[in-house]
Image (cartoon, rainbow, N blue to C red):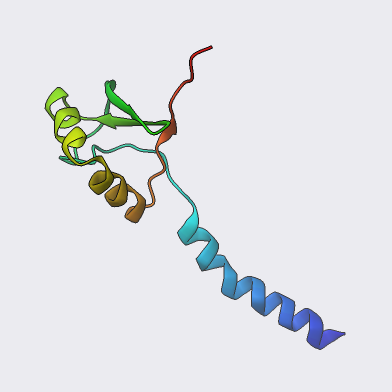
Length: 86
């Protein structure tokens, strides 16, 4: 019984960094230039709302959105869900 508990504790200890690595964080920086986001400048893409630091960045994002989404994913950033029309 003690060895079973020891194995479970060890498994939880080893899994903690993996779980933390998959935790997503809120978007605070522009995926194009890296500045602080302006909540008034955004693009809704595939059900996600992506914020930018300035109006020029949204146009740049639209040229290759998957590139910037991948960059955000690698940084652990999860975009907000875009509002849906009712």
